[in-house]
Amino acid sequence: MTVRTLVIDGEPVGAREGETILAAARDHGIVIPTLCFLEGLSAVGACRLCLVEVTGAPRPLAACVTRVAEGMEVATDTPRLRAYRRMILELLFAEGNHVCAVCVANGHCDLQAPAAAQGMTHVRFPYRTPARGVDASHDRFVLDHNRCILCTRCVRVCDEVEGAHTWDVAGRGAGSRVIVDLDQPWGTSDTCTSCGKCVQVCPTGALFEKGRGAAEMTKRREFLAYITTARQAHRWVR
Amino acid sequence: MADFPPSTGLRADADASAARGERLRLATVWLGGCSGCHMSFLDLDERLLTLAARVDLVYGPLADAKAFPAQVDVTLVEGAVATADHLELIRTVRARTRVLVAFGDCAVTGNVTAMRNPLGTAAVLQRAYVETASAGTGPPEDALVPALLARVVPVHQVVPVDVWVPGCPPSADVIHAVLTDLLAGRPPATGGLRFG
Image (cartoon, rainbow over all chains, first blue to last red; front, top):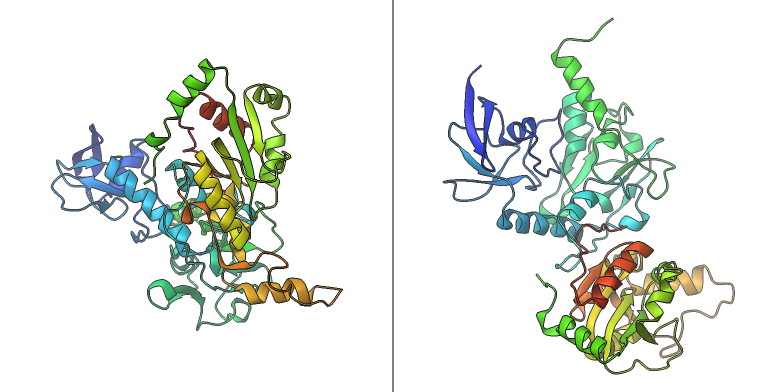
């Protein structure tokens, strides 16, 4: 194993070659806020919340997809990064229809929590309030497009862990949305195994279990680390 | 980014007022909201007695005043801007208030009040006055009730806001902390508060 030595927030940090800045930081207890990233899924660098400053780089880089290098100097918490992170969160709130007070995920939300942590007291941008739909055709689960931030965690877990690839993304730009199979009602899907992994990894209340009221949808993220760890270690037992 | 406005000079004014034995002039306003934030304000319970010794409540649902008065020190604004009346009132409030506080999620984000925005006003009037009505009178005529704005917006999209207090509603402890800071002439620490 080749070791790389770098500096994160002034602290010397040892990391494996090929490891990301995010992984190296987490190994050393340095917290970098994330949203689309989830341990056990591939990293896509979609949300940009984990932006860090690397000395010599002309622009901030996403820590979840940037590999460590020897002698790298990384800053994870600067005024510029804080301003960007807050702006990213405000834009996410302005883009969809996020009404925390009546959301199933209120108090258990990976969008609401970082907003509070970053000191976002209000949204400076005009709300788009788009007309988006709700798909309640599945027996057990509901998809509410109003709360979707297009992180693609559901797409990735369905493809990479469940192996069904029921979910995908259709459309462009502000018109993008997650779809089921060939853009059909969830309840009519031929590929969905109803495993519920997408619901558990969804950061917001966009995917939830039917029958849950406001603030009642807590999600179990830890199952994913268990599955992927067991798979890598060939721990499956028959 | 709107920080606490240095122009308000709350600290100096508060000190001067205290020296003269004057009390802070506090108002509350109820725009498009459920009154839950005002209920949470009442949850201050016995702390209301301490507050009452230091402020004059000059306007709001909890005070008997018909018109919004001049020279108000602090105004707590509950609710989103949803009607023509709200718009007129909030402009008056802003002009006559030194520190304007967006009080609760509807004032801060639009919240539940703004959920009609993707639907349009005609659809919500039809729903409220025709589809679910028993009297069959139809949508209200012009000027009978305040005209709905085409879009419900948070307060800061209409007038400048000095302090944002998210929460649906903000807890009594949060309200107490904010008022304590304002009475002391300090910018309230509202950074860690979450929506919902």
